[in-house]
Length: 190
Image 1 (cartoon, rainbow, N blue to C red):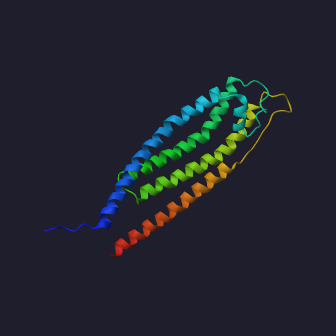
Image 2 (cartoon, one colour):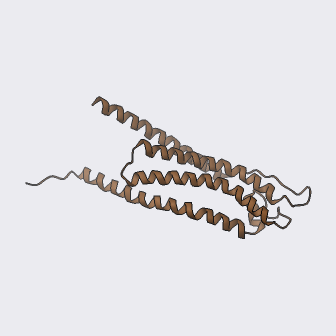
Image 3 (tube, rainbow, N blue to C red):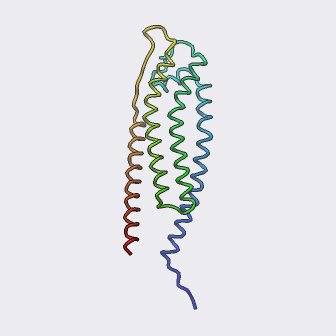
């Protein structure tokens, strides 16, 4: 007696296994970013020249006219660390979501909650980066001669794209959540 194998069931199982495998890798990549990005930020602010750092404050390379003091580098680096910390909180939420997927829990309320928090943290990081850039501009030009100090506020296409991207994710999560609610209601009636 031979058992017939449903090709749709086999394809779905293979697909879930692929999702689980990729999700494990993505969860590890998130941990790697959480470990590496803060170290990269410290290295950047400790070693980069003043003209390149000025770009972080939405300034031209020649805007920093006095020698940067160590406290200016560290203060500006700390200010830049705030949006990075928010971004890494988002990456942590993504890691938790990938961990759910790696366990085969794809369409769950918990996974969608992690995705929603991911998009919220990344949006907060994008907005905080705008404010941080302005504060960095002041810190870097603080020792310039009077009249040469600057406050520069900049909104880049990166900020706009990130906000659009996380808005898209937020909406998709909302749609998935609605689908979960409808599926649960249908199960109760059957």
